[in-house]
Image 1 (spheres, rainbow, N blue to C red):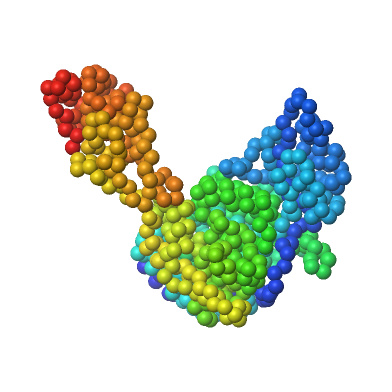
Image 2 (cartoon, rainbow, N blue to C red):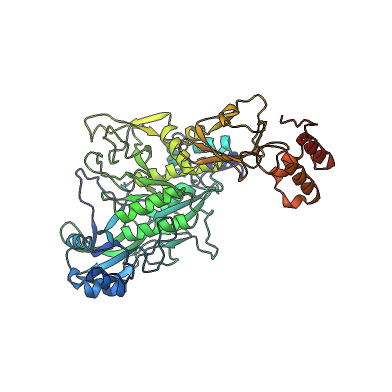
Length: 611
């Protein structure tokens, strides 16, 4: 379906019922991060077995299973049960071999924080911390929707601010070829207009449940079978990104991208601020860490996390850093408590390797919403950009309904949409380049809400067209020597003189650096010129070509004439670059004429042109 047809269909939208969550108020003072009572998360490496005389404690740990060591030998810790947390393969994931470090979740009978302090004194424990609770960052608002969905309720942010339809048509992409992992509390795949471009693990699963390690990614329901208060959160976020482009109701900002749906929530008993235990839809640090690692291991390009807390758990930092180092773009909601960063920071949005997203307002589109957390630190932007976060349309959990929800939870997937369009249009852009573009492309700004701060701070307001028009800065290789030819299509450079020494006499690079890798024989044919960008990422690798030099020693002599004759007779034994260098008469094929020219050159009877 063409972009124009989609837009036309959306202008003839039908009325559809909207499910609207109950209202909630933003809080004004920072609170300590909540956690699961009776659980701790720690990373532990079992000591290596050894005949050396080391401590009795270390020998005991090496001889026992991890479970018996912590529940029996270290019984004073009050650990009653222990299990290894599932971390999927990544740069910091360690095997199930008990000699390797792994993350564990322990059930305890004592005080959580005291137990963590005691655990960190144990040999092999690198950190111990509460199993923090991550909130879905939705500031729900009541309201009734009437009229056509897109024209009356989506156009103001979808077209006017985010400029998605303009980006689709101008750049001819809707996120195709990009996988976006949505880490949230559950999804209803049969909901009206639910995304249809879903990632598949090869077994018909479109994601995973890291809370209970199953393929059940449905929303969280209470014991009586009714939906939890925020049970439609995941479906809403998924719809913001990829709502089906069927021309009936709304549409996702990156409906062409594949969505990997990762459920992290369970229905758990939680201790509230009054000391009462109530069961709620809950995401823990352990399940979130598993979700991030699952996304990386299964090829996600972008990870959206519309959730957070005021604690930056070590187990989350490990996986955030591993995902970033693996090339993922991580995007998270800044939170809905109107916190200034000088009072409290919301994680993972405030982390260095994450794009933190604040929510802009609908009534006054030039400022942040009254509930959005925001930056006040003058030396660092913990949160990076803003996007609309009030009255955002997404999918629901029941048929013939959509949801309208407000929060930084809704602003975050709008930025994820932009990232998906960008990575689809610039497929060679590294995540470092995507971060650079997101942080610098905006041509519009919003200010901090005057009702929550006496000062005024300005933040970038992202839109898809501005982002896509921001071309990533890439290294530019230029010829310095008069005879140098840079063949970018075939990644070859020729025109060097025999026996040359200084590369800078022949080529130069801007916005990057050069690393030269000679052959075993010298700096001749087959040597590599690696071009790195300013961030240290490898951009391109060129091959040096010196006509007449086949063995790579930067001269043409009798050995090369023998090699040329062999290449004529047995071309499969030589690389394309060697055969290209042997074609000294530039005829496009190897023959006896090339062998004769190289032989005569070795006898000073002929000339080999390097141009």
